[in-house]
Amino acid sequence: MFKKQKFSENRSLAWTVFAVVVALTVVFSGGGALRAQRKAAADVFYYGVNNDGLCISADMTERVAAARNLADVAGRYESVSADLASAVDTAADAAEADAKSGELSSLATQNAALGRAVEQLYTELENASLSEADTTFALSQYKEFVSRGLTIGRDGYNARAEAFNETISSFPASVVAKVSGVGSLGLFR
Image 1: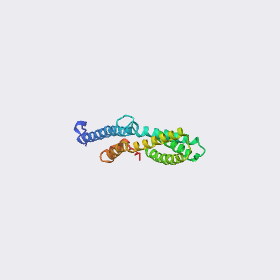
Image 2: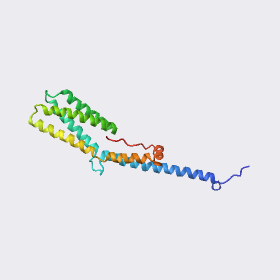
Image 3: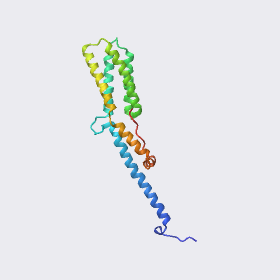
Image 4: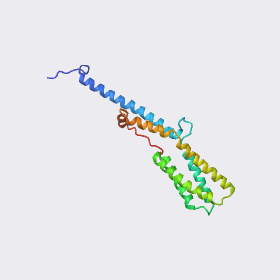
């Protein structure tokens, strides 16, 4: 017959409970730490490396605004293709939709499409007979668009996201990430 033992006398049960408590502690505290690291890296996209607003999100907002301004200028001239202006508006709409949804990889693709559409439109604007004011305004908007693109290319978000993704791909963080539901960050390329 088995002798009834107190919990404190049953070593195998005590070790099992101890192991479960340690595992749960690692998952919950480690998962919380990974979620905090993920949020800090993701915040760089929306608020900047120094939390100063110099970020991809703000640059994309300004790129879309400059693109729309170029399309508006083009709309005032019959000699400029309405299809090109429409392509810019369509690309700007898609970029805004992806920005709102938080789909960074898709937003990067839309940003590239917007860039191609703006380049085609601006080339046609350069060859059109615009008023002096519209020529000056179109040039300033194009420069703003290009400048914001260059700033995006140097932004620190991708480096932070890659570092976080590398962290959660290594052991034991990969196990903790899977168990606690912490996923990787999308890149903006």
